[in-house]
Length: 326
Image 1 (cartoon, rainbow, N blue to C red):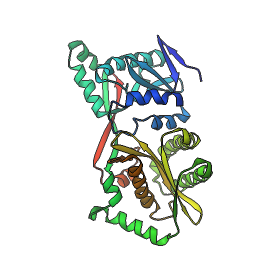
Image 2 (cartoon, helix red, strand yellow; image 1 turned 135 degrees about the vertical axis):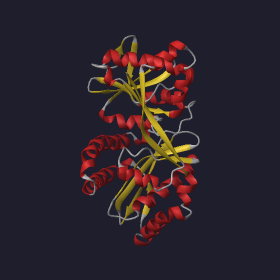
Image 3 (tube, helix red, strand yellow; image 1 turned 120 degrees about the vertical axis):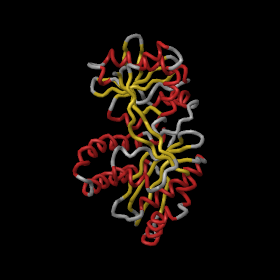
Image 4 (cartoon, rainbow, N blue to C red; image 1 turned 60 degrees about the horizontal axis):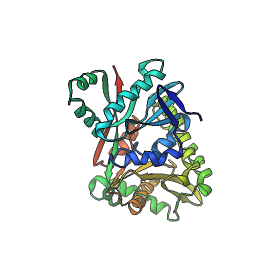
C-alpha cells in the first residue's frame, strides 16, 4: 500500500515493520489501557488503512476510513513533546479531510490527558489553544487483580466458582491446548460464526444493529490475528470437549505489571465454559508474564457485557477519552 504525503509529512503504511518502532515509544509510558499495544491496533486495522509517522519525536498512528483521516491513539512520547505533536496532527488531518468534524484523536488515556492539560497551563498562548478542543469521555477499560481472577475467593465470586464446578463435573474429559493457528484456525473461525449466531438470538433488538457493525470489524480482527499469530507477541489457549473446539482466547503483555485478554469466545450451549476458560487463561497469563493485573478491555457500550465485566469486581476502571476540535 502506498504511503500518504500530507504537507511535509510522509505517513507510512502501518504493518508488521512498524512494531519495533511503536514499542520503543510505548515503553516509557507505563499505561495500562488495552489499546496501547502494537497488536491491539494491528489486528483491528484489518478493515481500514493504518498509517504512522514520527512527529515531534512522538509516534503518531492514523487511520483512513473512506477518505477521512483520524487518530487511533494520541501521539506517543514524552509529555513535553505531545502537545505540539497534537497540534501538528490536527493540521495534517484537517489538510486531508473534507471537514474538521472527522479530525479526532481516540483512546486518549487519562494520564496523558492530564499531562496535556498541565502542559497547556504553562503559557498563555498554549492555554488559549486549549480552547480550540473538546475532550469527551468515552468507554472504560476493566482491570482486575490477577490473583483475584485465579482464586475467585469470597462471597462475591461464589456464583463464578459454582459455574466452574458444574462445568468440570459435566465435562470431565475437557482438555486445554495452547493455541496453534495451523491446527486450530479453521475450528476457531467456525466457533466464532456459531457464537455470532447464538449471540444475536438472545440480544435485545435495540442493540442488534450496533452489534452487527462491531462484529463485522471483529471478524476481520480474528482472522488477521490468526493469520499473523506466529509473528505477533501473543499467547492463546483453546478448549476441547469430546474432540470439538468449544472455546478460545488470546492475550498479550501490555507492560511489566499488566497483561490483557484481547478476545475470548465460547459456545453458549456449554454452560460454565466461559468462566472456566477465563480463569484458566488468567493462570496462563500469570505464568508467562507474571502480571499483577489483567485488563479485559472495554464493554463496547453493551449493557450485558458491562454486567459480565462488573460481576468480576474490577480493581480499576480506566476511562478513555476522545479529543475533538471545536
